[in-house]
Image (cartoon, rainbow, N blue to C red):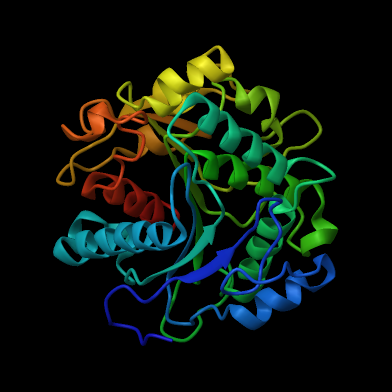
Amino acid sequence: MTAPGTRSPAPAEIDLDERGRLTMPGGGAPVPANRVAEHLARRLAVPRWATDIHVYVHGWQTAPAGATRTALRLVRQSQELYEAAPGRYPGLKAGYRPWCVVVRWPSSSPPTLRGYRRIRDRAHAMSAEGTGHAPYVLGHLLGYLDAERADPTGPAVLANQNGQFLHLVGHSFGGRFLCEAVQRAAERPPVLGWSTPHDPRRPFTVDSALIFQMAAPRDAFVRHFGALFPRAGHPGAPLRGPLVLTHSRWDRATGFWHLRAEKAPGIGHSGTGAAPVPQFTTKLLPTDEVYEQATLDHRLVNVDADWLYRGSRRTRLHPSGAHSDFLRPESAHLLLTLAERSR
């Protein structure tokens, strides 16, 4: 385990197979469902020096090693931004020492309509009720991290005076996994042993959620993920902080391919459409500009990244366009701001 004060400690890695089952390291046999919690406890040790735990789930066309590199680079960029200008993030006066858990799944396919549909169908199958194991495994992962971390609402622990904050970060189809996992975990607390979602002081333990270029229909939060937000008879909500989603019209994967496969553009291309809660729309900001509290303090925030997520000259000709063009300092600035506002 890397000691505090060193740059970007190695992420922990969790691998899933095509059915969403947790696998042994190196692509081994699936872990039996009744051993998932035990396996996670053996594989993961939440470092006490960490101030923030980021759980990252990648999207389409990402190899396992690439997922780890992406997560590490995003966390490293956020750390560099904080160290370069800590005064820009006053909520982090107690420090920012991130640690990351990377969830990896088989997402590669030919860059064609058939390939896109294959991964779309796989992502659905991995999360489907009764057959898919991904929400079950991710739910246990989040529950384990929540149980092991220092409670932000509790007394001071070790060098960290504010507890440890838990953030979700997803890309593309990875955002679907995260929404499904959090929703299922909140609806079935006996699976995890989390605090009840009806507790108004701490309705859930996920402090922020950021999804880059989500590969889902624009009405997904009405059709599939409405339980993420407060509703009649359920005043608590799985997410304590906002759900933030970026979009760019240069994203061909959730634009052109999603349009052909789903008969409508996706969230990553056009932002969220219908939603069960009021939405707010803002623009992705440069790293030297501060987000006003009023722009992020909402249940659901759409972030227009047209000006930046445009792709390079090479990727503009790629079938996915700017779908993966989120790995930028401005994205890390948004992630770091959400971590700061969680305090």
